[in-house]
Length: 152
Image 1 (cartoon, rainbow, N blue to C red):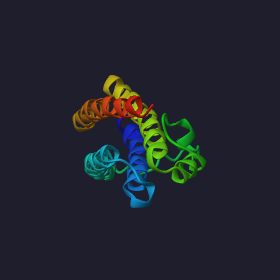
Image 2 (tube, one colour; image 1 turned 90 degrees about the vertical axis):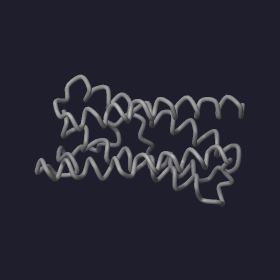
Image 3 (cartoon, rainbow, N blue to C red; image 1 turned 180 degrees about the vertical axis):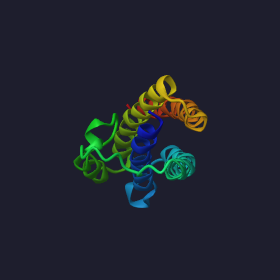
C-alpha cells in the first residue's frame, strides 16, 4: 500500500502543479485568491513529490506502477488531457470557478488515496505524509469552495 500510494500520488501531485502553473499564467486572468492558492499548492506539493520519489528510490521501487494500466483513469480526481485543454481555454472569473471546481475534485481524490494508505499502510514516513496531505488539502478545499460560492 505504501509503494502504491507513492507511485500514484506522484503523478497526482504533478498534475496539481501543472494546474497551478496554468492558473499562474497571467493570460488566464485568475483572481488574486486563485493565484495565492496556486502558489500555496505548488509550495506544498513540490517537496512532497521529492520526498515520495526518494522513498521509492530507497525501497528500490520504480516511480511508476508497472501494471501497464492507465493510472490517470483509476486515480480519483485526475483531469484528462481534454479537460486540461478545456480549462486552458477559460479566462477570468470563468477560469477561477472551473479551476477551483477541478482542484476540489482533484484534492478529494488525493484525500481518498491518503485515507486508504492511512488504513493499510505501514511506513511511518508515508503515514505522516498522508496525514499532512489530508490536513492541508482539506483546508484548501474549504477555501476553494468559498471561491466557487462567491463567484456564483
